[in-house]
Length: 381
Length: 66
Image 1 (cartoon, rainbow over the protein chains, first blue to last red):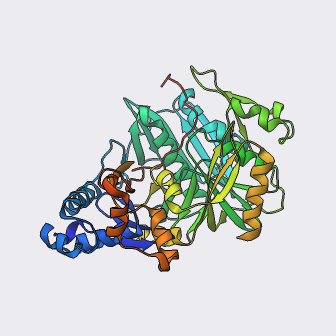
Image 2 (cartoon, chains in turn cyan, purple):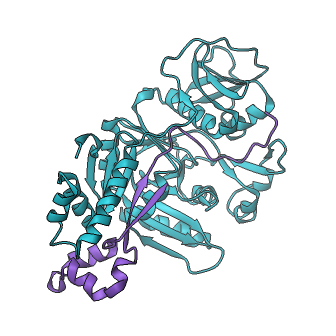
């Protein structure tokens, strides 16, 4: 078998093996026994060789034939690169910035950033969640970003250079890239050293951070808001970046977005909740509130190590539960929902980081239950 | 995300086997015990997980008007 299709990195996690393939930047999760068989598959020079190697492990050659086909398909799939329209411009080609008639200034970590938008709709993609860091200091900004529509594309550019472009319909990628650019600048990091941007919210208490993840609509942001009124500090809502050099999670200074369905649940936890303005998006009567938690302590945490990931799900009915779980349950949602760097050294670091993570599942309908469950992980971790 | 079913021993069974060496039986014996369903039922899975190709967020839909 050609060694070109072999996985590059293999890491034994708690109850599974995670293996990484460079060509597709994909991760394969295998049970320990299946990994042993997969290892024999990789070592075998032929199907017959695989049959021989596994004859004491499996009942008959029919099963082995099926297994051989499945492992072959696995290798084929895991070595097929994925493409999408969006591109990251490595050349940073020079472009002409059109006149953009909406300008906002933001300040975070003592840096002032000017952002220009070509329309109110595009401004609405970014500004409501950054409203709380808007500043009146408008002279001599430390960085300038421009976001505008060009044909069917959305374009992100610095003062003179293209940074990223995508189809208008892929605006969530534009928001993600803008978030990464802003994060990178306010923390003065190197863009090529970011290891991941997780679709997760992260809160911190007693110097211990907890990453909350789950499918969209599971209540991550609502729970994040409740936790910030119960002694936890917000590190990031919905977009949690990780830096490769120190494997820390970094602050993305956006507010927590709260959908109308969660307003009732939050009124008792958030002071003056009714006074927070709702942001209405074009053509949608969806009045989202953006909540900027008050910082309890004198310091404002900008980065934190993380050893705990919790899969969160709000359940209207049924029994609440908070339990330690295996990595498989969490990773099958976390990885497809996140960006991870395709660089081999970053993939290795990511797998190594996963090895040290404690995974939990939280099913709740009572907020106090959720708060006490997460407090318990702070005490025990 | 892609799931591929594979008819081998599931993760939970692996854990049980590891923790109970006294009662350990071979895979062949285990499958025999399960009878005809062993070759018809997907007993375990492996998963190919593809991360997103670009940074993304999941904010509220801004609606049309671009």
